[in-house]
Amino acid sequence: MDLFGNMFNASTNLLPKDGTVNYYGKVFSKADADFYYDKLLNGIAWENDQALIFGKLIVTKRKVAWYGEKSFEYTYSNITKTALPWTEELLALKLKAEELSGETFNSCLLNLYHKGDEGMAWHSDGEKDLKKNGAIASLSFGAERKFAFKHKVDKNTVSLQLAHGSLLIMKDTTQTHWLHRLPPTKLVSTPRINLTFRTIVG
Image (cartoon, rainbow, N blue to C red; front, side, top):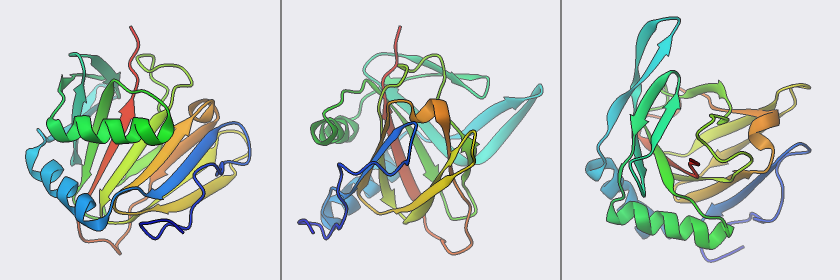
């Protein structure tokens, strides 16, 4: 058990095969996690997410924001976003994720889930803009939520709870062979903010 009460071994791969997922548990004290939650909730340029599905524009309750070291374009769900410049808090969080993981990142997609009925369906982050087999660092603030993985072929599933102030790293061939999702729940009535630090190429 470490300073923040974790009982997780960050070197343990949570996936049985075909990828690597490491959960570091809480990497911030509660005071620091609360500080970043408040700063992100009130200081990020949140917008409702959009997706173009079969020619129809879908607008989600969930809000998103896209930041980076350059005005990177990132296309997913047939919608292209242009990165905003780093905020002071996002730069500090990026450095923390890089220090702990040994990886480097140049962009961040943020998600704001207002309560438990907002989630994310099964998907993988394999867009052509992303570095192939690159690491994705996922920081969570706010409500604790379940996060799940499902193998694309044998449908084997792995799930865990992502705590306030915690870090999860997905890397290697995880996006090629596994889907992941944030399932909706009626048990959560408060917001969760998720930051996924990524590497855009090109």
